[in-house]
Length: 213
Image (cartoon, rainbow, N blue to C red; front, side, top):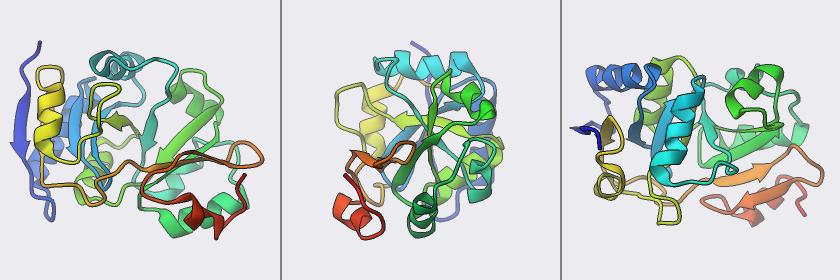
């Protein structure tokens, strides 16, 4: 058990001091729980393998389940992916920032984040706290939902606190999340493209933009 600090944070105007504290913890290898537009997330420094492993350990998550990496600007995907299909550009234009995670073929730099996996999942969240945190860190954040593996993903701070207090350094507590549901995950690294998880964005919505199996 570790001492977990819980801070209330303004969802409309996130306090800079609290964001900087969270960013400093992450940069040093700590874990932070924070709200996104979908559910409350658990974040670590994407470039620190031991920090990424801690996410798996505190959640009881299997190591073969990849993490999603949050970024704050579209241009930041280019160093991390090896190609950007035209159909994926359409999805990005429509759903970023927002509740769609996209899996791409990974670049040599991106492999450092994925631990050798040939694909990487990326998302830009539509949430001021989440975006402020990514920006303050200056690096992609390795993330997953702030719950114990197999349990419901939290859309309220009190759920995240109940799940993981004593296992992380900091929890940024705000109100209920916008969508109250996990992001949809689509894999564009293979043809045909595949919906790995249907969440906020429905498969039928994606089919209007691109053909899916």
